[in-house]
Image (cartoon, rainbow, N blue to C red; front, side, top):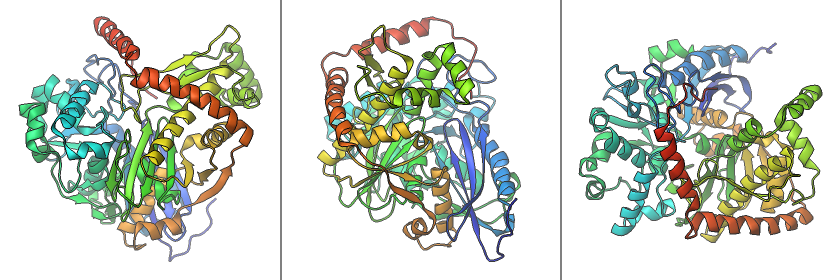
Length: 568
């Protein structure tokens, strides 16, 4: 039951579009109280092997999504969250959204996705490319090599490397592998901006995705001479397919159309905020907006965002953007391409049937069982080190042709040993990022976690011990959705700016986990071993992981694909 709500209260809706689902939350403007939420799982999930409808086979390292799955979140999750909240829709004053990034799609001039045009629907490059689409690594390598050869100023803002996950590599792949689809592409747009287009009826672009994923620095995109040197047909890419005024975060970019109001059950005409990235939007929800507060958004992957007072060029980070997280600071981003996905992979592969039976008997899931079985191990007792590259390396190597490694396996190694080693590997990856930021001149004063993985107490304690830092926890279970709601409140004029809205609506538990000095000492020794592996396989002369990836891709390209998709 919901208690009666004061007539004077105002509310906002935040919608977070993730990798496998979208979630909506209804939030009170006054204090950030979350009154109702709902989740809608994407029916098509991650499309990795065959296109829906045509059944066209996808090559290795592809990851696509279906635009209708996103619209269904507006049609299903938003009305369900409203119903759960008990809020009168007439009292909702704004809506804001966030999205995984770089998730990008080709559209017509009116925003129609090419994937939904019958002429193009059977062609893979017409579909939205999810952030984890890594088949454009070759294009990314050329983008980086040419930028360094020409001395492009912007390349240092991205740690020296543009990722295969981002806009330019993916667009260049479309041009070079299906020029017909590229020629039909009138707008190349982040899903973060496309979904706002569906809400307002007009195109807008936000400073966050443009800065971090679209190489927009110092007021402009890369020049046409550089793009032409990549491919003559690519020269006008930014001018014709990207160029648009950029809206600052928290700004109002339009009003909810009658059509979008009919989907959501919200009043037409309410404020719609500029789009945002799921990681960056979460910072105000966790009160992680002061300079030095590093927020790790931990889910299927991890994104690390941090504000700094000065502009520094940090090798291996994803990017630094003026106002990329909050106005008045330089926003730094780094990340790991797989974290929760790694743990889920091991659950699919490793534990035998009697582990599942034990979990069922105890009312646990496999994560809880393996956490319990490994929690009391002395640090290093399993004798294992793993590299957290099951989905490539986003930071600090920026190389998605890398793959995972586990060493130290013996005939006595148990499933919980591997599980714990994988948990630890992601903490080592985060420590590598923290070290890079501090060595690059960007202080880290606090480590804060949001996202689903903060629920695992062993994982959080491992992070505290490996980092030798306290771990604070964002209190919301829907960090990005709450962050979007905070931006909606600002766009609607309920708070003067994001900083004030964060103070009123964000929540965090400081120092929830503290490092243990003895365990931290033991982890220092293991981290040294991790660094040796990291250097050998990641930056050394031996490109064994690249060779294995090439052998795999050649074999897969020659074999028929199974008739299934990775749907959830």
